[in-house]
Length: 519
Ligand code: URP
Ligand code: ZN
Ligand code: ZN
Ligand code: ZN
Image (cartoon, rainbow, N blue to C red; front, side):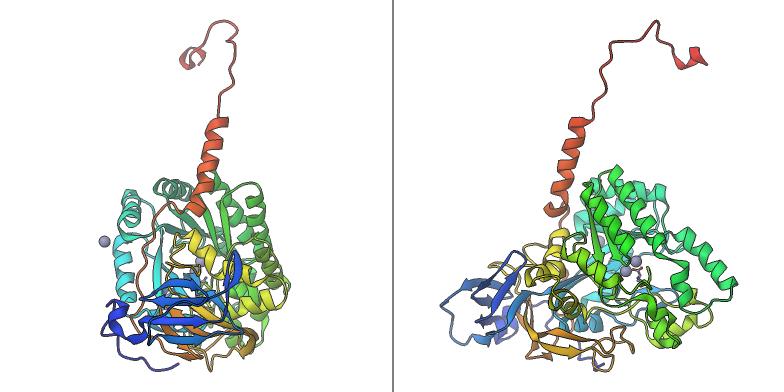
């Protein structure tokens, strides 16, 4: 946990005016994209990739980085973070500075965080508040999803404004957190319908909030007040039921759906089955669900158990992470995130007498890339191209950032990582860049090190040394109707309208009867 440098005084000044770092040549590495690998040198100028090839003619004075024996991958995109989120009576401790610094240290060069308005709060006002929090802090590019925590004509209009004027193309709804963020099925249905109308993707936190509230009361009455009560009150059926319900509701109005934080085998199976049935649904396991499990809630140390509390919870079945990784490897699940929402031990202690008051959230931003490499590629479940797809490219496609982000190609942003797949590191709260004093992956050793991390052409990790610039990141606006998401939706609409025809009948027997006559 290093001290903070002063804010970037030359923030948002075009990069070529900032320093002699405006040109960079990366020589000799193996370039990995989601659709294949190739050899080539990469010439970067003014924040974007200018040319890829051999024997490039490069202006004098250009810095050259030797990448021989290394992979060059698109910078990671984490589409699910909660930095400085006001939540459960406190605020997540990683803010837009420490959170994005940790991201960069691990090879992630863009985040999409969530604006979460209170019930009754203007979505636009909340959006501007979050932009204000992020703007002078972010070390990498960022964007925002917006949560719909209540429903009205005002919310409907503001969603449209967010799409048209503020580059938001994704809205998240909570099926849990009863009385704070949860929306009801009739509202969900209308919100999905509206998302479809404005070209956005709907996201859901899928858990049955009513059942959880009842279960939790019973568990506390039975004398279970520790962290294990958290999982006991929200078992995997409760996640799978809500996942299924969300898919059914979204499918009725043909709205694309994105299930955030898939935590269980059964919820993963629901996403896989619904995709097979033709639903346009995407599933996002997170670093936590892919790399650790819910046996931690039964750990005798309260501190240890509480550190692992998030919703939906990790699952006690220790084969869950491997199973989710299998689903991810074969595209039954599509991409990875972290749900990074960190709290210190002191914050977690708010729930020392009742698990319902333990702030929900864990880390992941710094470690996701290494963990997915270790559990996915190193363990032989996926190749480096699939790794790039699930850590970067698919997020870029779903959220309409592609090909600006998520690919190494001429014209794309120069967001890339020189990745050493042979080197290892051991994860620890003692050495991580997060602001929190715990790390749920403590002691795990992973292959895969981000040796150089380049964000918008700037070397932000240089031979393993983290050299971020506070406020350097830009807000990235996203257009609606992402082709990756909306092309299949359009096909489904076309199919439906061509098959939706009444049966042609010859007529009625006898006279027609009106309702009034019949009654
Ligand atoms: O426990 C979690 N996941 N905390 C962050 C808020 C959310 O539900 O995504
Ligand atoms: Zn505005
Ligand atoms: Zn959630
Ligand atoms: Zn979340």
